[in-house]
Image 1 (tube, helix red, strand yellow):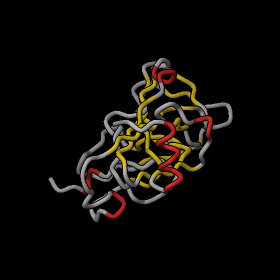
Image 2: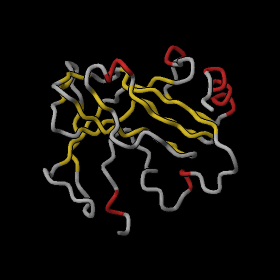
Image 3: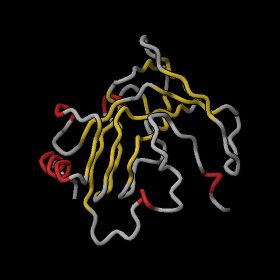
Length: 178
């Protein structure tokens, strides 16, 4: 079941959901709008290797915006820091962003119970698009879970994305054994 706006507010008051900064006008009927943070990143190497730590280069979006180009994967970050201690958060792109040909995630739209961090966005575009810091990019939807949680993400020893920082984070696939 998806949480309603009132339920989101109730769980925020309880401390089970946190969004910082929180702006009431960003709360939808059953979602919360998140915005593009000031930092983007691109991978340094043209060919990425799943067994290697692929380094990224970060840069800030200038005031006049930044033009995203097709055939380049950009890592972005949400302006908002979030914590979700009892629900499964899903990040979906806003329809207005999709209608500009911007995809904000390739595969990682679902968070885990216990996810406490900024969201790294996997941004790709169909044609050149100028983006700006603070523009709405997505919406968080919260799903109830059934059953007890044994190991929330924020205390999971194998969790690779617990380092809290408002910048995009590169793939940590290389930390897996395969």
